[in-house]
Amino acid sequence: MLEQYMNWYSFALEALNYDVKNAKRFEGIERVIVVGMGGSGIVGDMLSTVTQTYSKTPFHTFKDFYLPQNFVNKNTFVLAVSYSGNTLETIASVLQAINAGMPIGIVASGGELIDIARERGIPYTIVRQGLAPRSALPLLLIASIKLLHSCGVLPVSIDVIEKSVQILKDVERASTIASQLAEFLVNSRLPLIVSTTRFAPLAIRLKNELNENAKMQAKVEIVPELFHNDIVGWERGVVSEKAIVIDSDTNYENLLLDFYANYLKSVGFEVFYLRLEGNIIERYLEGSLIAGLTSVKIANALGLDPLQTKSIAMYKNFLKKYREKIEKEVLQQPS
Ligand code: F6R
Picture (cartoon, rainbow, N blue to C red):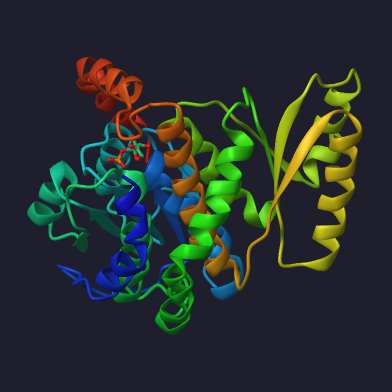
């Protein structure tokens, strides 16, 4: 598993060369909704934030079996991302989009979604198989950006991506920070992850990686919203816990983060600053790499198998029984 993360730079270069099948340009796209769950769905969180800086098109992300009704129209492009291509939430959303005649693009390593794309002439990209979805992040993210380009939607230029992926070359730096963070977190019961709004996808990603690879719980809180609720929750004190503060590329945001870090220390937290460099895409990529490596290092230290996610499999098995019922109800929604 560690090796999959260590290969992210070469994954990124590989994805920059992927072909888009059934490529076609759609006219009149006004917005994009990215659907997908877990390690695939994080691509939507990242794209909806990155595009606030780099694109004129509004991006949204939605993670459920259905599409929000006010997004169901022919000017909304649906990008479906599922590493396996078999995730029922994502499939049901795509079926709803097909029913409504919406423009769609699919990124997967295979599975049912690729079958659907082939049958219906939907633009799609196949990423390499055999990985854990979470360790395929650069493949899924870059394949999604390339697919959107070929459909006439510009989330961010390919030049910016080519430049940004260079940060993944420095595996040494990422691995050193990951070792320090793993040591900091290994005995924590419920670490608190703090970031600003634009870096929330990274905070969520770190939580998800700790959940899946290290079988560990974590809590995410976002500045400035946390100053309006979460901050009060520590007034009764904390026995002893760990907080990770993900820094920002904006000065005033770092001031707010420092203020909260000092407050957390005053109520009993130990604080680890995750300091990243570069533009938001570089920070997402390097931060996600550090998150992946940290969680695998914790798993290794605790003698756990980072690859195995029994509970997700249990949920997916449970869902299979209700597939027909769910799809029927989703597709009955007025569009
Ligand atoms: C991440 C992971 C899960 C899956 C999620 C959706 O590594 O295993 O979070 O990403 O269950 O499955 P896919 O990605 O196949 O659509």
